[in-house]
Length: 115
Length: 114
Image (cartoon, rainbow over the protein chains, first blue to last red):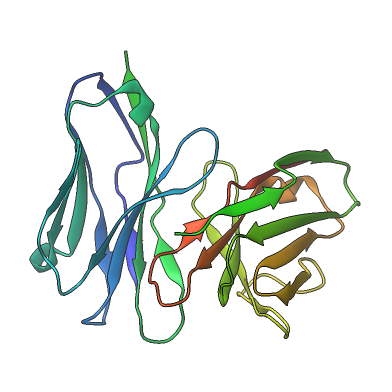
């Protein structure tokens, strides 16, 4: 069965610290997509990244980087030099192309960046 | 991506009443969804809004409680009927633009039921 686990419920860091948000997934499919979304206090879900299962290259976008490891079924998200504006709830999600278009969301990690 | 708007952005309602939430997309999309996010929780899919036919509901959600309309490929409404305090949540619509794999979300409607 498909499942996404975000074991970290809440993380607090001081501004400028690096922080890694963990995401572990379970799927029976060999083809799938993984996503990260950010939900700031305003409530809107903001799309951050999509990763295909056949592309294991890690990605960097500014202060954000993502480490995809199929061997450990993990898709971790690192924020370098965190800022107060990074404070939000971050969701990891899984979608299997076969069948429906359903996304399986993790329970989210609340990140608090303290000034 | 897609630009999605929702109305209202927030509302406070009395129990027993109904609220209709509107979702408007700036382009035609086939796949449109409605989610509920209860306080402090993750997202739960309510239903897939199908254009020209009845919505497809997930387990635990029924049409009588959450009727959905999808008159065209850019617009949908979700009604929360006979509300109770347990319906207090953020309701989000989302779309997967055609030929894309990424789901985009509207800004959400914050509902508080007293």
